[in-house]
Length: 290
Image (cartoon, rainbow, N blue to C red; front, top):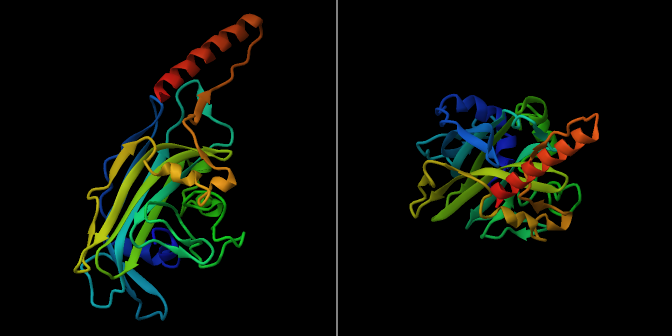
């Protein structure tokens, strides 16, 4: 699974153990809205991970870096990212109601299965395919909620989990994807950083990360290193499918999250000037979007 079921129960243990395998953060990548930089994004702790039973706590597990141990029951990889919003360009602001989130598209030959939704497609699905807590979801339809995002609203608002970007301008991500040992498993993700308002999402760029398990059940990163690409990932439009979130009205848009600030005016001349400036801004953005 490429979501949080393996993370949630052991998040504290994983954070503590993470100090033992802490990798340096990758160089910060610039994040653009149109032609303007609005923040930076980094990745960290991208590496192979294994899970084994915790001998001190029955039913609990310990996630650890390599080498693989005889008691390990699953293998996969860990990936973390942080986006820091530095602000819209001068004279612009975020659209009303805008926040930042993640939309992760997973491609694997060992997909999730849900009692309500069936098996996830191997040609890509929005993560999570089923509620990580093992229930059928609040709507009893197999969805964790009716939003295509990696974090729930509660997780997003938690500074220790999603970062609470509305208050802190920082958005966090962490995932430890795991599968039981088997030959020739592939798992790859497109992690889209999006700004969202109403029921639309606009991708600012995406990380590609993942792992594979070979015929000898050895795990390696794929790709290595993870890569950052501007714009929407090839699979982002999958969220619009009826079997995903299309039935809930979600769409991908080319409209940008930063828009001109309405300026007060005291005369018709001022209003005319504002209209002219706004028109030029809009035209410039359309050209960039094209």
